[in-house]
Image 1 (cartoon, rainbow, N blue to C red):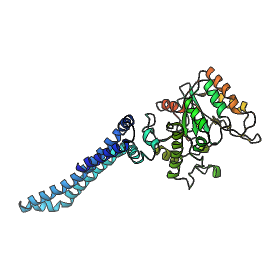
Image 2: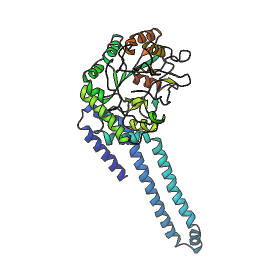
Image 3: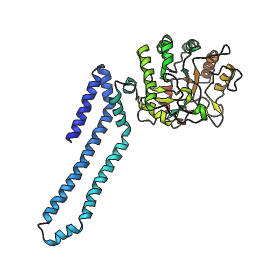
Image 4: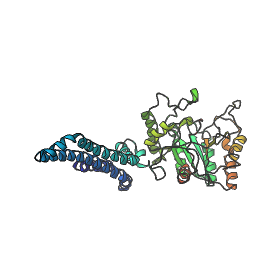
Length: 393
């Protein structure tokens, strides 16, 4: 118990030290957020100490009993000698049983404990993970690939990726502002560094900014062999660095924190990458696809070569969105993928954005941010957890 009190005291001092540089309110919020995890850690240390103590108590009890019986008639001493192995087995089994119970308890509460340790270890190195990483709709969730929201709600999210170009960014932001639409935009660190004024405008307009990594690297072998196996040189540390540097740049430019959402470059994602990013405080958001019907809300607006088999005119892109799942769920809970940059000289899909928004509103749809979509979907069984298909930037 002394060890337990010492460990808890050390953790408390560490929290006070990390919180000393921030304002009272963030410290309070951080303390409340970590209370559950700290209690689980204390309980685990207590149970571990209790198991060790009971084990030694058993050994002492056995020794005392043996010493006592040695003074008794020879028959009792003989009984103890004949059953010595059995008594030792009972003693060992008791210790193992208590250890199993302890491990099971830790397994049940592993997520809050790990969250606490990650927060304490990386609070200063990664403000994103410590201060904004676990809103209620993320805490305790498996790091799934969110590709659709609640199909019972007449709401959808029209999201945008900003990799390295901002050719249509102003037009898109103007259209969204005119129609009072606030959505989610995933930005790379390169985009933030290149277009700080546009990024600040996004924040002023009330848009939610997600992480799209720093340099937009390929993460899997998809372009090589259509496999989403993580590339050999992509490590947990490298991905963490990509996410952290982007978040740092965003905060330095806007004074705000990024939303705890990210989108993998090129749509190259797998469970391992999602887990790594989740440890940094991010949940992955893909886009909606129906593989059986060969339909997708990836608009492919980045394809500028009209001779490519992937090329779609702006009219075809509009129809691709409006006709998605028309005879089933429609666009309920849908996540649309478009881009801020384009290499097209004419027939730009962004010019159709206003028409798309207007028609969907006439059908009764509401436009929401991705975090709102995920929050609503987290309470609905219709939430899609399947991995998103590969796509472009």
